[in-house]
Length: 168
Image 1 (tube, rainbow, N blue to C red):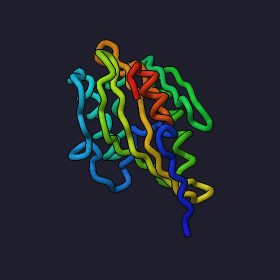
Image 2: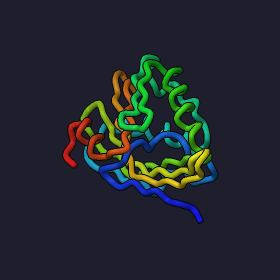
Image 3: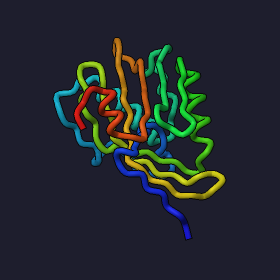
Image 4: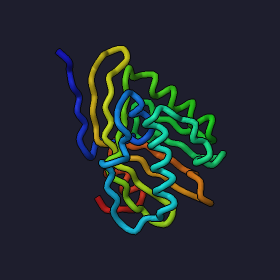
């Protein structure tokens, strides 16, 4: 029998990136809810990144500024990285703890002219423990000059919304 650890808001975070690549349908079509008057360019850039990740394509470097700031804010190991290569190394390191990890964006939230918050459902199975996990998490995407200049992953959705200057 599998053990399942479920994290509920506000214990949510990460989400977003990568990983419906394990045979799941594209998490954008049909499941994402747009609200607010968000910058269409920014939301489309985030959508394209998620669509690539859903297909197992993590090469969307053109969406990210070469000097992007990346943070796994309230992850158990925590991580901060500067630059695209360091960001991808941090991701690979964090994901190596999982046999299977999936993130499905649920809602895109306008967080102002230069930011988008993505609420995401994540699930995975621990590499060594086999423990199943699911959580509602969030990512804060910051833009500058049409590129992602900051990406912060949160297990706690309330902290993500607060960091983006939004009410819960």
